[in-house]
Length: 238
Image 1 (cartoon, one colour):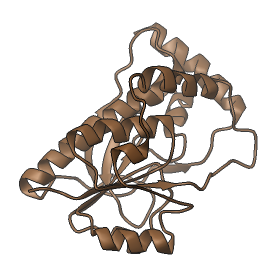
Image 2 (cartoon, rainbow, N blue to C red):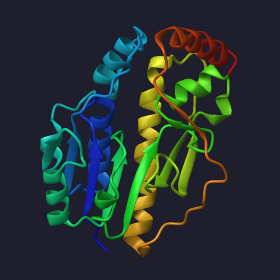
Image 3 (cartoon, helix red, strand yellow):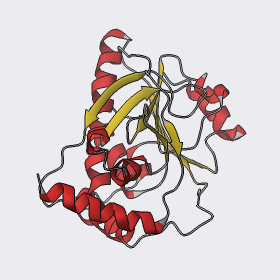
């Protein structure tokens, strides 16, 4: 069956890549871009993030000269929970909603979906929920939990039943600024697998989370410097 699929995300380079590649395989009915900018109340910026932006623009988006609006009907809202956003979602009546990088959804937003509301989480939610979760795994030298997770959305943060999970494949000498691109490519593949199952059968298998991971917030800049050293040591041994 054909599925009306809506993407809820933010206007960033890696999310643009995700929308581009997923839309090639499963055309999106609409894209909702959340514009509110969550920022830390302390120094959380590290120069590696500028390298990450440059890499994603020059390498991840190489060959892409379009915009979100060229891919599908695109709406901008401060929050995807805004009243007007909700009204448009109800009018679209999506079969599937994919969430990648927005804030927590109100239950009323989740209920606009008829088949499945899915979230992409960069990490293992059974250990690391919230923000900067790959960085926190690296900080704890927990490289086995550098994974990407696709799970159902529920009314809590990163606690829904897990559908698919994949280890991030790192290679010797790769840089920390490449990690988000590696993760985003996996996000495309996991989403496509789930949509294929939903399109064919209207169902995708899942399992309940065995534990609730600790909730993490923004990582301070000084700890990101430590992450770079730990990541470099790890990939040098691959």
